[in-house]
Image (tube, rainbow, N blue to C red; front, side):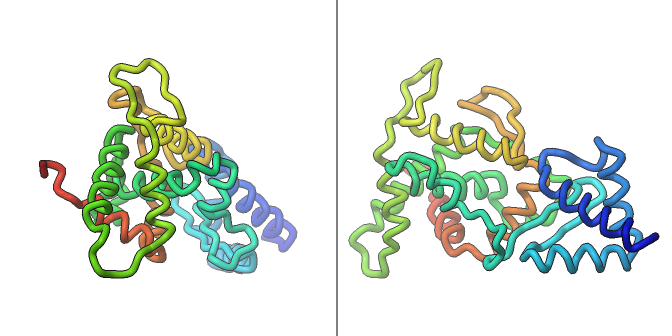
Length: 239
């Protein structure tokens, strides 16, 4: 195929990478360029070079499609901090903690990230419960010898400052804990990471394959995720 056609299809790869809610199974053009990448080594090398130049790590799967993850020095990188800047100052650190805890709740065992057939479903209440346990564990650890992570302290402080939802409340406020979790889940849904499945326990959410790939990267390079994972392992049945 000509260099001109290669350039056009590299552009199509970039375009589809920017549409995270779509899959190759739903679009012939998407399926076509994914098949080219998987079956034509020279074309794949050209695509990899372009994405690498933009600071993007590329994963291409027949079923899941194109998942592009920005490296730390990529000009296209969008961090959790960038996302939460648009939130109320009183909620910014808590939103970061919610995102990390959603990841941990969807994939409580790292081995689950290696299973492409796992259906990761979680509820709003399960995320709220995990964060409540983390705050409790942090409070119990306060005063013990050891380094203090100011960012983590602020995240727990903001979460603890949110209202506890009224039982059987018909409407959720962003100022209560389930309301904030739902707000973050809707944001992740809009970005193509989650799918809303129902209203059980405040909301039921399905993690899409794109989220699994993102969490894999998160586990590899996030110290904060490791801390959240440790704290939320507190025994749920503990009085």
